[in-house]
Length: 98
Length: 184
Image (cartoon, rainbow over all chains, first blue to last red; front, side):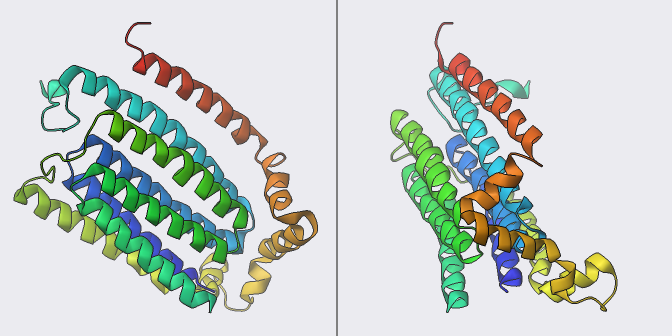
């Protein structure tokens, strides 16, 4: 019924996303890795919605709406930061470090 | 047959996700992520969620990733120097990611029978009896169509979250405009 393989692939994608967030310094690539983690969770929702009815698919729907909102605001923040420091590298953006 | 295609798509998704993480060029990383998302759309199709698969292609690869690529090109981030962190952070990150992966991979052992057993605590009931709602949903998809089966609960049981989502999107639109404007 593909439940085990789907959950395994979802686990792999999620941990790859975690790895990306931790090792990259480019703010945009970091954001893309967060999207990757959201996608991995969506796969779990869809795989389990085969057993729980349509609720899981609707949850994916809401996750996508939140991801779209998050991408719009997040990229606007990155643009604003870029205008200040002309870099999206997190190494140079240390204003909050005190 | 479907299982083989599913595993092939899963392999493509995992490999292109790895390429995305280790690709120096931000634009190339974005393209690899698009491939991951397309493979996921195919997997949704095989898992019996064609509407979600279509939305995945439209919203994720069509809208969100275009926004990402648009910003990457706007900021001209083509050939930057490597932005991967130093060896110390890399080692810690690897330990954390492998730990997360190993912990979550225990889920791979689940099949419908085990899921039913852990939900009910007995082996007396067959998986089909435990997951009766899934059968109801499958029949709804046959009578109302794929979109109707998703839209029905969305506008009845999940109406309040749906309306709250519209508020969230409004807040995001206003926030993005305020942040991106030089002078308000």
